[in-house]
Image 1 (cartoon, one colour):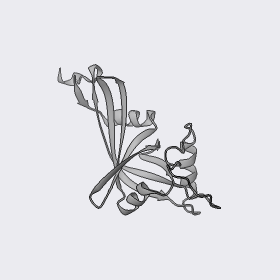
Image 2 (cartoon, one colour):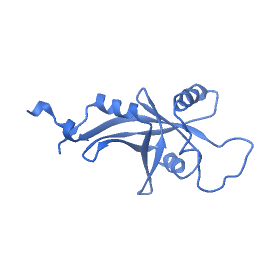
Image 3 (cartoon, one colour):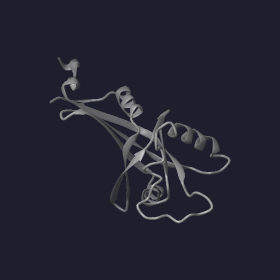
Image 4 (cartoon, helix red, strand yellow):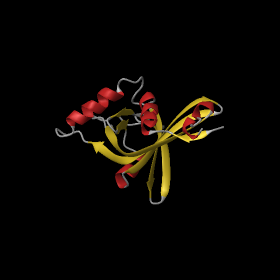
Length: 156
């Protein structure tokens, strides 16, 4: 098996072609990782969530990491890792346009509000929805690939 680094363009292609990733955050020296559905555009990942542990943790420490994987078969895979900063998109006149952009990008996916909109426990019904939109501003993106098609021809 061969493993090679992905170029930035290859990382962007991988992230663009998928919509589920694993979001890692940390608080008080404790890591936490959860699946998220995202939309990628212009060096940003947009997401949706209900209030809860990941939101609390990202508010406390906005430095996050997202991993996106693709598997072809047992020996062939690609993986991109994104390092970035969490920022909420407030439901204010100033945040309205970016919230609309996040919503319009996310809604292109079936069940785009999952898993961020579901909780394992029964939720109380309130007059307004507590959901929130957020963005991860990408600082760095790296990736690797393994398998027969991962041969780095530049070294031959």
